Image 1 (tube, one colour):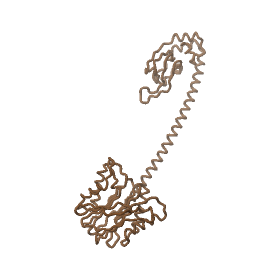
Image 2: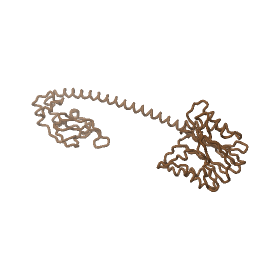
Image 3: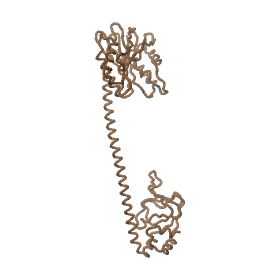
Amino acid sequence: MSANLLVNIPFFTGLPVSELDRLTSEMEVVNLKPGEILFREGDPGEHLYIIVKGDLEIIKAPGTEDELILNTIHQGEYIGEMSLATGAPRTASVRGRSESVLLSMSRTQFTGLLHRHPELASVMVSVLSHRLDNTNVSTFRDLTEKNHQLQKAFDELKAAQEQLIEKERLEKELQVAAEIQMSILPDIMPSPDGFDFGGRILPARQVGGDFYDVFELGENKIGVVIGDVADKGVPSAIFMARAHALIIAEADEITPPDDVLRMVNEHITRFEKSTQFVTALFGILDTSTGEFSYARAGHEPPLLLTADGEVLRLPHKPGMALGLWEDILLDENSLTLPKGSLLMMFTDGMTDCRNPNGEPFGLERIQHSMANLNKINAQAGCDELFEKLMKYQDGSKQDDDVTLVAIHAK
């Protein structure tokens, strides 16, 4: 049986049966346990092994994180003939995969065989040449595959770099857009006798759709506006800038707030090019009388904190947002601000803001928080209400822009 195994080795194919029997009788029997190393990469190539029973693994970096199984050889196959013929060190390690029995031929035995059968030299040259050709083909194939992989990795890296450059460009553009948006907000509030104003805004994204403004109209009149464009991000920010500019352009000391909003709506809907809309509250404060006349286009009704700490939600009727229909219904109101009162206007991002449990801040919490804002100015009132909202949110995701604007009657 063992002689038949030697016939399968190209070096020994032409030998007579008697020589094969002699080699078999002279070869050493090696028993190998599962996981046991037969030889390691770099060891001298002193023996050829024939597998009589079991399986062996040809591996690189055995026992390390980089271990790689190159091949598995089975019963009847052989290993180590190249090192035996050339004397080169082992190019890989070999480990038992199962209980294995091997026949081992030493270099001395192989040299004696060559003396007895010199014709094996030409067989060796042929076998080694064939093996070298196969190795060259395999190496070329491996190099070609590695080149394909490297090219693919390069292409992916190049695409990732281009995406990174594009991302950085967009981030810079968003930063510029955010700076432009913030520049629309008032840097310094008007300061007429008897009144002060405050405002606060926090976009849900880098840019948002909320806006507010407080601006002088002349003749003791001051315009106050707050708005909330549907959705968030760049499109809503552009629409916000347009709505804000239209309100500022149409407002003056003699045009009633409802007429201003109707003219703005006419501009927005004229060409029917947008599906966006904006809720808004625009009012005019007469600083000589304390009267605040305002119109609501689907916006949240304001809250009034009286001097004795009572928080009132001002009377309101249904209203329609700007940008949806040519003919709109607005809620028109007017009140005289009592001395010591604080009028607070806000977007629905204030009521909808949620804590980590998913519970909205809600109108009642706004009213309860406002009840403790007595005897402070409008900006301090916005800041304190905003801080209470942030404490309630407690780091949870912000779903909508939050904006406050207030009027305080001293």
